[in-house]
Amino acid sequence: MPRMTPRRVFPLETLADTARLGRALAAALALCNPGALLLCAPLGAGKTALARFLAQALPGGREAEISSPSFTLANIYCTAPVTHHFDLYRLDADRPIPPEASLEESFEDPEALTIVEWPERLAAESLPPERVFCRLRRGIPRRAGQAVLSGFGPKGRRFLALLPGFLRCIP
Figure 1 (cartoon, rainbow, N blue to C red):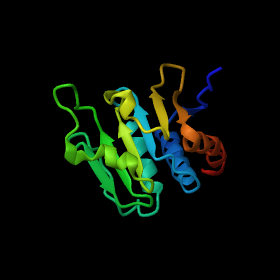
Figure 2 (cartoon, rainbow, N blue to C red):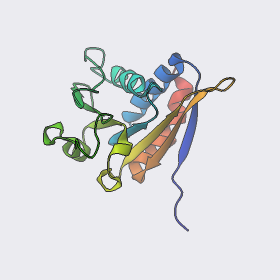
Figure 3 (tube, helix red, strand yellow):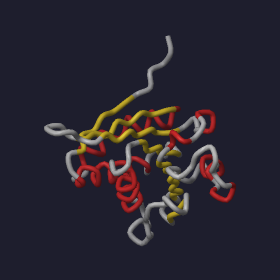
Figure 4 (tube, rainbow, N blue to C red):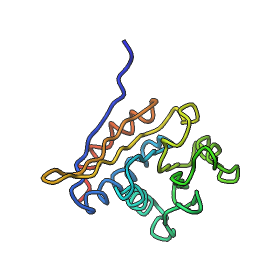
């Protein structure tokens, strides 16, 4: 029987909940870096906000200028670990990832964290084996939004197992 991918669901009722999740993700990184965090959600659902809260919570994040790489495709933040932030929204078959964006190299760097918004624009075979996939769902009337995280590979699964403990400790 194939192994099920572990999954965790976290409610996101407010922007403060997204900030708290970002801080918990940063805290869990200190013990286990899955290498890649893939953020999937519709426009305006909070992908960039979550990436910003995570990067700001890392050592060096307060000094880093953290912004959406929608037009530049990639930003690198001098955090610990170094954070590569990609936004692939503007990519399609006619506009592939330019080589200078160095997405593959960032996936291969064991010391870095790579955050990718719109990972569904990548071919499945180009995704790293160690990763955490996060689907953000917007709230609908009378229902909170949520973040659904799945861990892939041993590091992705370990990272996901650590996360609830950090969420309990972070205000």
